[in-house]
Image 1 (cartoon, rainbow, N blue to C red):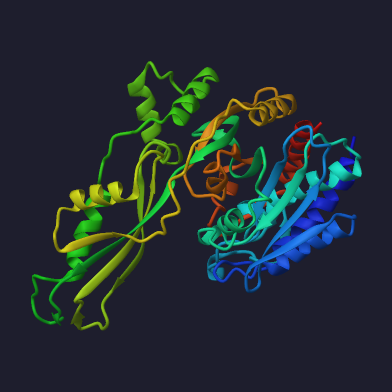
Image 2 (image 1 turned 180 degrees about the vertical axis):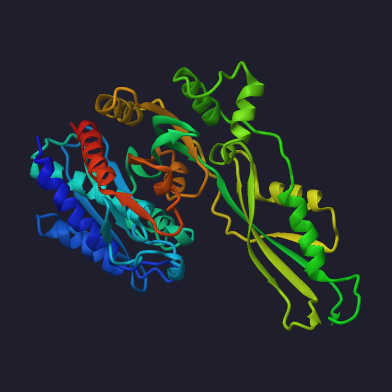
Length: 433
C-alpha cells in the first residue's frame, strides 16, 4: 500500500509548480510543461520522448513496459490551457495559490489537475513494482484547447505507434457531488462527445451616415437573426448513450424513468448542463460590426459556437440554422475545421467495469454511468480508430469547481486532488495486473 500521506504532499507540490507554467493557448508554448513533466519522470529512471510538433510545442511520452499478454493502456492529458482575463480573477492565474483547501490556477480542473493524477499513478506503478501485463503510456499533448492540430491530431497522423493502444483515459467525464439540486456521488464515464460546429453569420447592408434614418443596417439584420436563433425552442434528441444515462440515473432514483417521458423531458429542460446533452446548442461568442461611431456598418459578422449531437453533419446543421433565420441578407458559413464526426465507443468493456468497481468500493453510494461530453476533447481522434477512449477525471467536483472550466478563479480542492490520485492509481493498477 502506498504511503498516501507522503504521496498527497508530493502531488500537491508538483501540481502547484505545474500551474505556474503559463501554457495559454494561443500561443501554447507547451514545451516547458512537457520538459517539467518529463524531468520528474527522468529523475526516477523513466525513459521519455519529446516530440516537437511546432516551434516551442512538444508532446511528452513515456512508457512502462509490460509482459505483452495484454495490449497497452494510455493515460493522456493536455498541457495547454485557455487564456485568462486576469482583471476578472481574484487570484493570480499562474501562481498556484493555495487558500482554504483550494489550489487556484488556470488549468486546475482543465486539465492539469487530472494530468497530475495520471502522473502519480504512472510513478507509483514503477515505485511499487507492480507486475504489468500491459504497457502503460503516459502522454501529455499540446494544443487541445485550439482544436488539437499540433497535439493529438498530429500524433495520430505522424506517430500512430504511440496511440496503438487498447484503452485510453483522458478528460471529458468524471465525478460530481450533485445532480441538479440533489446531493449525489455521480461519476460519468464519457464514451462519446458532441461535435464542434462553429458558424460565421454575415450580414451585408447599405452603409450611410449615422444621423439619418436607415432601413438597411447590416448590424440590425444580424441582430434580428441572432435573436431568432437564441429564442429557438427545439425538440430533445435521445441517443443510445443518453438513453442509457437516463436509465441508470432512474435506477438510482435521480431521474424519473423513461416510461414517464414528460417528466424526464421537464427535468432535462430545467437543467442547462443536462439539456446540452439532448439538443444541438448554440451560443453567440464573437461580434464584429462598424468602423466609426457615425457610420452605419456595411458589413456585420458574428461567430456562433454550436455543438451538435452525434450522428448529425455540420453542413446539415448549418442549413437548419439558415432555414431558421430565413433571411437572404444573412449568410451562414462553417467556421470550424472539418476533423471528421465523433464516434461512439462501447461502455461494456474491461475499463468501464474497472472504473465502476473501484469507484463503488471507495464510495458505496456512488452512481457510475456512461455519458457524453458536451464539449470537444482529444478522445475523438482515438475513438475514430475504434479505441475505447474514455473521458474520466477521478474526483467529485463541486458546482464551483465545474464553473472553473474556461471560467474565472479556476480551482481544484486538495481533497479532490488526493481522491483523484488514489482512484486513478487503483483503476490503472487493476487494468494492468
